[in-house]
Length: 283
Length: 110
Image (tube, rainbow over all chains, first blue to last red; front, top):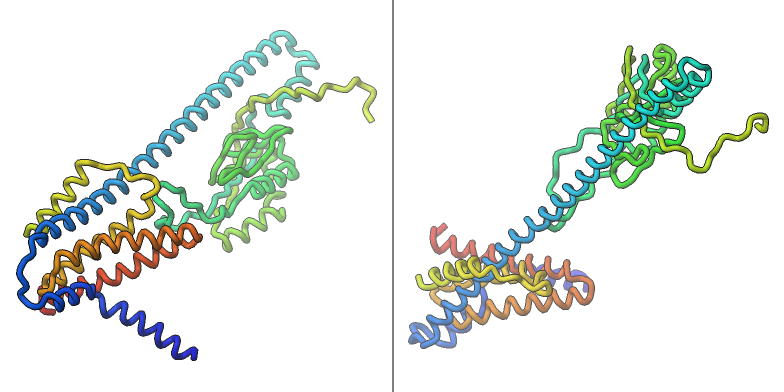
């Protein structure tokens, strides 16, 4: 039973492949016989059919090539809007940093050389409110190189979803935490200074550091006693794990001891809800 | 001869008019194209076989487009539209290849 059914299915397929001629032509020829006289509608019918065929093909061509640039146009306008928003964000941040540095100067004029001024400066340094420099360690983490672009099977205009990103926020975070643990005093990730309230998160395909999107390669600069940092970091589980991943996943991972690192300030958000507790009431 | 001229005229008209395809008909455009190509190759082959018939040519083209679109329309309603349009393209594609091979045998005797 099964074999019979499968042979009939095979016959159907063979028939499909071998008998490609439209049986209608043979039937019409047999009905009308050889050298039948021309009918009045033969010519117009051929013309009409060919017109239709050409028209269909041309419409399909025009349609395909018109919708693709429109999708690209939408994409370009979105990219332009994102870029302007990023630029205005950068400009505002630069303005905030300029104003911050004016505040710092004014403060230094107001509190020259006092113990209070020194304490304030120290607090600002730890909070990431002032640019800092010093010796330290720079760690580089990068995603494996993308394989050659394969054509996506989607419709034109759709965005292919990349293969899973190998490195995520977790990796950046674990390196940062290890560096804090090893005694770093100030850390910046791809030029974004970390503060006590910084968050490293993952959204879509980008790692967000304080809502600033950064992409691979990730450079994590840490200022601290560079000898201690290098030895502790090299000994750490985190470094061992990424060394293993280098050979397994193809990520690139390295670190260098730096004599001078410069980290930018962050436009530190002033705490809105926390206020200093009265002294002596600490528990 | 006149068929080729009409084909070119159709292409020119399509390029000049640039008609907007209604959104509803968009999914049927590729099927219409494949059916059109099938009709053309089938017609050329019949011509070379000496059994070309204008009525069969026009009717087979129109009915191919309509039937293929109907199949896909039904499939869309039943949730298998993509698979059925693939099936239509495969079947018509096989016919196009077969007819092209027959034309090749006629023209080059190989």
